Length: 420
Image (cartoon, rainbow, N blue to C red; front, side):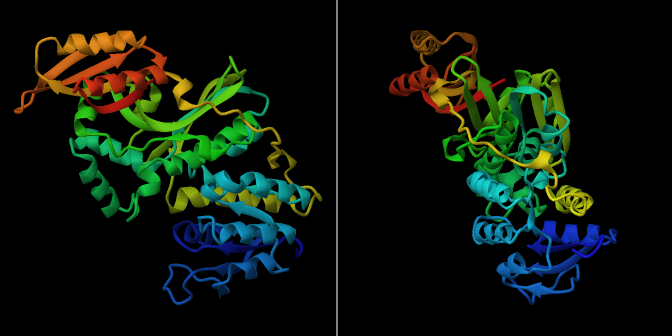
């Protein structure tokens, strides 16, 4: 590295990459040597000194000190970053899927090569959360981390409530505004949130997380009727990523699914594309980080913060940013969703006949489920009753058994949503 000049290569020049290039112009101690893109002929908002369509060229360029990866996905990024690390280059990445799936492998390789991987932008966009957990909050024993980690789904659920629209209508609107991709699967099915809560659980609990064991449920089954019922009962519906300790057996309960959140809970007030991360631990108690979770500028902010952290350290020591290194040799014991305990909202549809409420109550009771409330909300033209049930805290396995019995009695379970 030339004196006081950090030389970087950028892989990906889309929304985030463009934002990074724009923002880095103000820093005289950072030089963008080269950028890797898929299409060399595409018209771009920013100009750079050199473009290549071969990301391996950046990973192998001896002039480059730091590889900034904002392309996303596993292929070819995994092999490119492994090559860069083996070439003693520090890494800054926003790639949550890659870290959730192959983070342990990459961090181990980075430690062997005495380089750092910084990834503040991989979780919650512009919200600083990874750095604070690894530094300021490092002395805490955490019990729980959870949050709204996907702006697309939060926007859709907010619009369903505020405009009384269906999921399909709000998804279309989100796509038109650029909040949702043409293929929104990763967002609406909960996979994006799964990757992020996996990364958060790793740094909060300092254990290896198997993302494939995380229970995932998206928002595609949420109806405007569910939104309306939740509102009347004093709740809002949010898609949350949750990771918490189960003290009895030293396991971790990690999952992603829609939740009825009490309107008294601050998380319920986080609307539109905003993200939030909640932490509970000792001695800090409860803390929340809230801000923009995606987009060119917020995500670029986190990427640039990581680049500057390296720039400030690289000429001072041979082992930069030791507090940011990841070393988690112990694998987490992850709890099966069936062994978790929750309260539940059940939306049911049944023939409007005498005694149907009693049947529902009897089935719940026989499965160790106490009911907080059971409300018949009206009769449809086909003489079916719409019934809403809220349960006390109960075992997931019991609620699933009850659902099977309800279905056997011609009672349709239109939706099941957990409650906090």
